[in-house]
Length: 259
Ligand code: CIR
Image (cartoon, rainbow, N blue to C red):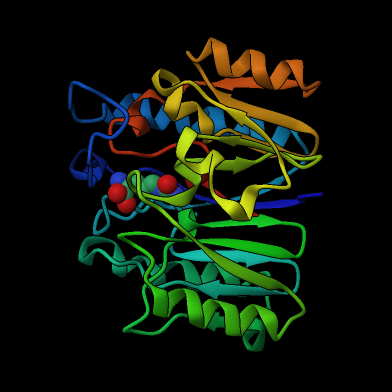
């Protein structure tokens, strides 16, 4: 059960956020005003599901800083400040730490150190186990340090290759009840063999990053096939318009830290 979330308001520099345009054929910049409205709505939805949301002020120095999932990984009992790989995002780690200190004692906040890199979008938690994507943003050393940290607290972790794009959770997501939404590639990954796997059609790739919160699944608006798969599994759903974040590779999980 999640009770809290940390979000951060989008800044005007969001229009310069990093984009591989992995979710769109027609690259364009986000509309800042619309992004702010969508972000507000996202927070209201988290609140409606029982979360107390700490929404941090925007920070113009970091275009991608509304994606609070990346500079930290939070779990029961401890938090890990990551080491974002891209220069324009690395400073976000210093900005998220004071927020983490409101919820975790200082000696329960750990750090991924260079040459290790990591971003929270590559970390998928299933119970007391973590799947860590080795990607362009999270390297083997980052994953190794993370493993050392979490095993010291009674968790386990293993690595999974990310071969399709940005972060692990763009290509596989855990809902509940052993249910995973996957791409065809992730469907074949041995680490996921014991899950119930549901392959999301390629034209709805973006909707894999749906977000399970306290029994309900948030699904990006505009992906009817994925919505039906999730609803047919029996989950109540809420659709959320994230069109402006999608333009810079951002999706539902990226916009918050939940714990
Ligand atoms: C980036 O490239 O870092 C941002 N434009 C998007 C980050 C998305 N975060 C996530 O998937 N956890």
